[in-house]
Length: 126
Image 1 (cartoon, rainbow, N blue to C red):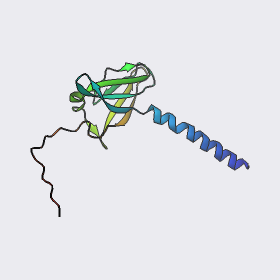
Image 2 (tube, rainbow, N blue to C red):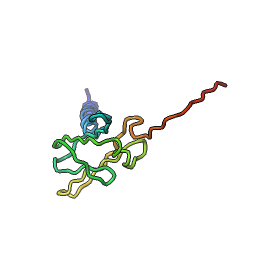
Image 3 (cartoon, rainbow, N blue to C red):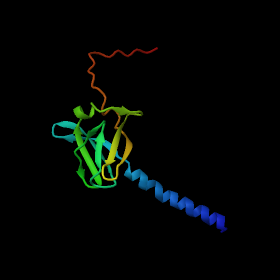
Image 4 (cartoon, rainbow, N blue to C red):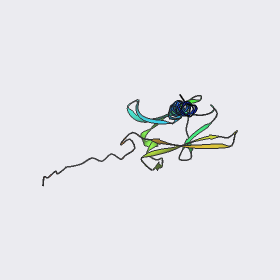
């Protein structure tokens, strides 16, 4: 195997190992039951346990250390501003370092949509 081929194989190997690490650190959102209600659970990874997690300028009460999670009622989550592509913008702010990182977190389909009850539905064929 030539030196160029070995170098290319090494670079490809490093990229393969680097991609899952970034994918794992992205925050996620899912619907969960909280008592009789439904809640939105956000979970992710932050560089330090003291890093503040917020959505729409409101700091979340999170559980955990570097691996965090926050559970909020849907009524609260529905007041948050949505980003493009039906996602939330989660801000990780490290006051000690003076840094801030924003993650776009895709939401489960229909999770923050309004609930509309139909009195009737008419379907016609052409």
